[in-house]
Length: 484
Image (tube, rainbow, N blue to C red; front, side, top):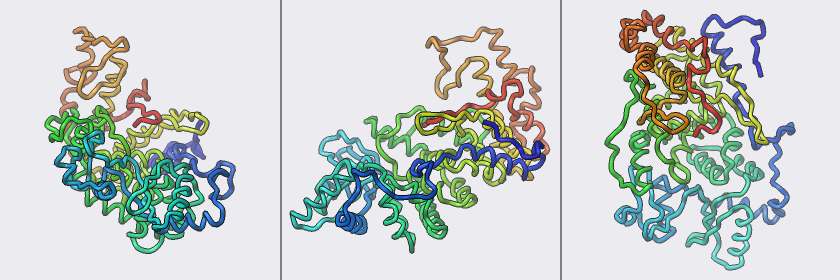
């Protein structure tokens, strides 16, 4: 695959580089899985075995209008509702060391005694009438759309939807108007039915703006609890290792900067087990990244601390809105976020039927254009992050050329035979010279770029950050499909 410039000229200024980069990044935008590739328009029709009769459809739409989306247990609001339905109290579960609550976030040991809470996924609480015949009819209807239906004092709690079945979308979109409370409720219901992506993509522009504002406010309100230390504390509690505060946090050997913090948090979380089930604030961040305009999205990302919610938003941008990366690396206010998103871009794109599109050529050019926009733009306000990116690129290339693997965060890299390798002194000296730690690589300039604070050092930084011409792919850590 090759995307060519129309007139064959290389871009010579920031505007042309940004336009070229957006054209290349469009190759990463996938075909929506919910939209048939041979369809001229969207037709919301479920499979034959899931279709409802007219009477059943009338009952189904009424149930949707009266139902209540229930958040997963990772949010305090969801945990409180599930505890009430199970006849439990949050305070008692916390005292029994079954739950850990930090602000609006919750982690649970679901094998704890008397927990009985469940709630790994989103659910729908369907309020049912008290008559036995109607309850039996409603339960039978729900079991055709959900894998798990449980009776509760308020009706039925349904989770694990089959599908997604898109015939429900017109009902949700028809109600998605008005204030932010209504839109939040409809989005949560769509998320519980696993139809959130098509729902968000088909909202009107005004509804998208209102919903994006509400989601951004929810993220920023909980920003103090979305950092990597809170993530780690909750994950460790879920593993049964206590709720102690993270005491040791290995910082990446990079200049202190926003990008350094992001790379450090990413490397730290990659060495932890992921929690079971859905994380509510990750879902909020991913939904916001899908519908927000570029500049409000960038401003919100700047105010979020490094953590799983921030990374969920970046993953959604990289997978579904990759053109935004060009805007972030072009605008001086979002250089750190743009550089981090650039590092997350995979070299492949998944196709149906387990096929893959190899985008290595486009990926190499995107990486080069992104770094040119970062360095050669009209204004640079975050030189420490630019320098951190250059050092990160160089360290990745050196580790791959000399060790054949990516250097680990907390341990030395292992060879393929799982044996530790101690570099001979000659080889170690050569590695140090390449890394600029001895006189072999202009030590004065190596010291200078760590302290650069203005455009006068742009040439030094550009030399450091420029991909290796002899090994362009090795200059940046390659990202594959399904990285997380």
